[in-house]
Amino acid sequence: MLHGFTGFWTGLFFYPYPDTVAYSEHLLGIAVFTAPAQWLTGNPIVALNLAMVASTALAGVGMFLLARDLTGRADAAVVAGVAFACTPYRLPLASHLQVLVSGWMPVALYGLHLAGAWRWIYVAATVLALYLNVFVGVVQAFQKLAFLQPFAPTQTEAPFIVAQVVVVAIFVVLGFLAVKRFHPQIA
Image (tube, rainbow, N blue to C red; front, top):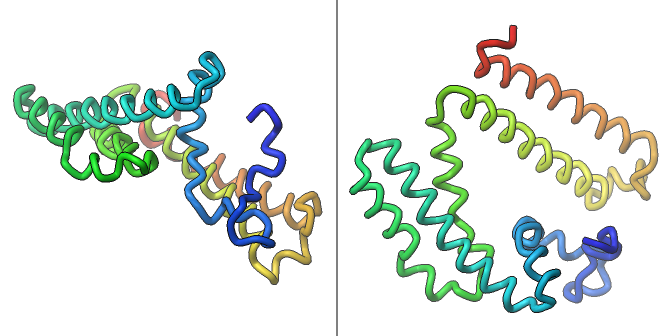
């Protein structure tokens, strides 16, 4: 991340094609959380172990919150949290960190049941996450689709910028409408 992602999407596989990491699981989302541990210790194994322990904790806590919200019972929520965090499928997949970080699923479902200020904050964060996915989708479309490549080969040309401005405008309107729907004070 310190090098500005220069060459980040170019991997060793599918040579000589460029940007092949985009076809794989790049773990960039997990790296945001583990990078401080790696920077502080200088040891990538510590960062990996931290991510694995944190993924188990997130899975358990996320499922606990969801189950308690749905059932209203803390005892059932504890059982659900332990069952989800310690499910047998985690052990054979220990080498696939991207699969182990599944704790966001119950957290996202829990967010659907939030009330008050947390509900509109959840909605705004969801719209932002969707925008980031669409932003990457537009970038990938201009890189990978043969009929779009001539319009923006370096992604600094007008068609690419117009497409991104349109996407931003759509999501600003979508975000405003979503927050307005779930935030009663905004009229």
